[in-house]
Length: 405
Image 1 (cartoon, rainbow, N blue to C red):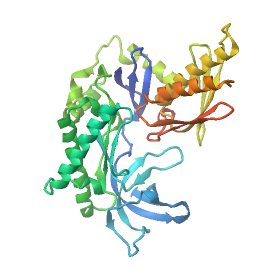
Image 2 (image 1 turned 30 degrees about the vertical axis):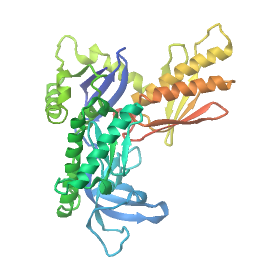
Image 3 (image 1 turned 180 degrees about the horizontal axis):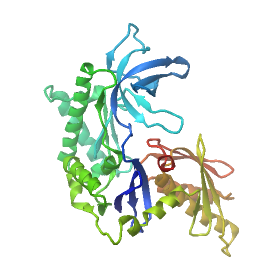
Image 4 (image 1 turned 45 degrees about the vertical axis):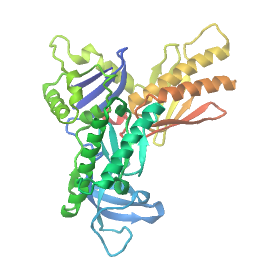
């Protein structure tokens, strides 16, 4: 795969292109990065709403965020009222866990997490988690590395790091399968020291202070690239290239050999890889399939609906074989479109009606297999008698349409 970064109008567009030249992912970031996701602030409680079990916390004047009370675990208060419970006027450390979407403001949590290339210190889950996309042998090896680190840390009271069992769990990412034990341990030490520093300096900072600033989204996505799958990182704009080079030198030096400054005045990068066409197709409501069928993708306020149609497919085979062929292709393309458009939350897929259980299971199996390739967690819930399939995909960023249109 190739990772292309291009300037278009007032956006920085990041494309992950497959070997066939088609986009697998497209992300759009504003030139002036306003993304709050992952940032850590000292916020002030505006109000607590008991009937929805949530509070609203300002992280800066006029920027209220939603805090579910179930996420209020071991909060770090910098100012606390007389009540033991959370109350208006309290000041505490929060992290933005989900950016604003449509009419909803950002969400925050008191469970602080830090993400590296190979591991995550996850405040939401105390314990050790290993990527389910790894083979069992790899999972066991990486689990032993994480367990040994926790034991060593607990035994060393002068390490300058936090006690992970009290503040955060360890999640081993898929990329860790290609890293050495020492590389993983070094990243764990670095993140642990960083989290300890944030927790230690918080009581001495004023309200609305930003304790931890995430890099711009287009730089942060380098963490998810796999060396074995990525042939090159191509950037045309010189300023963006220099920013990327500086970031990789500091955080991901192993990716420097594949960083390329593309320069060809006769053939701009957006022409070479048809980036404008790829973007246009990713925003289109109708997606044609090779079989002649097509998908209609319609986002709504509550969910996204994908309607599968047989379209121009007129094979001279039996009706059930025709329907199965279109549905299998639709399952593959729907999984690609979910990742391409960054669709999240509830996604309902209306497949063409199938009569046999064998056909339904084959389509569900194909969909599940394709969703395993998605870096975000995506699960098939069930198929109804009407061949409606419910998929749930983790919400992190807003969909591509919101960032471009």
